[in-house]
Image 1 (spheres, one colour):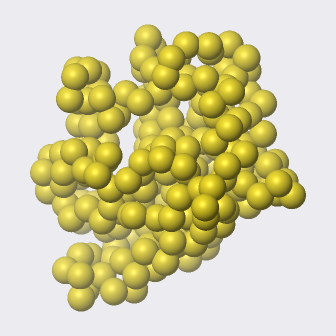
Image 2 (image 1 turned 45 degrees about the vertical axis):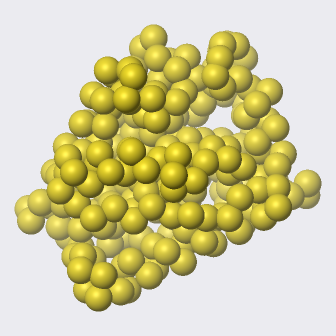
Image 3 (image 1 turned 180 degrees about the vertical axis):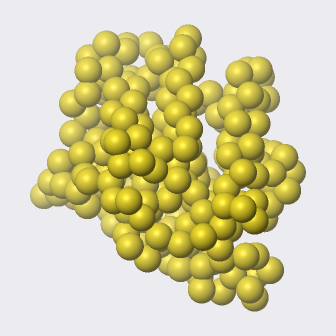
Length: 232
């Protein structure tokens, strides 16, 4: 199940169709791509509720959908990674076979060091702040565990996780910190950090060779976590 990025404001199943198609082919899996409601017309928790409903439908109705409920991977990039990480923290998600996050938003206070260090296109701190303003109601606590999975505890039942970060990205610090928290909890499967690359690497895989490498790494993770030996 893939949750697209776009700052909770942009993006769609169409913008990430090539990514999902590649993963479906490379990992030989069924991919459910979620068309969740976007901000600012639909603020938090609308998008997360939509994705939670789809995840429940996939887990509960797996057999009617022709999939194995023991082999469900939850994935997302950027804002979609934030939603995926939040959904993976609830106890009922303990049945997930894995979690795949690509440069996820994990701290909506935007206080990491990389927010002060990265100033280059395409994503800058000012844009991240604008997205968050559109997504969260004015009264929301941005540091709350409900919206910022990074500072929250990671429990041992958490799904084994793949996480990719890129250097030229305001989200770099929080992504790396989240990977470290996952490692400390013993649930980090893989953390890959790409030096010299920018936010958006995944959706530019058609023109950036490293983006294709990233897709292959995710596909390998999916294949490994959905094998019979790893179902739980």
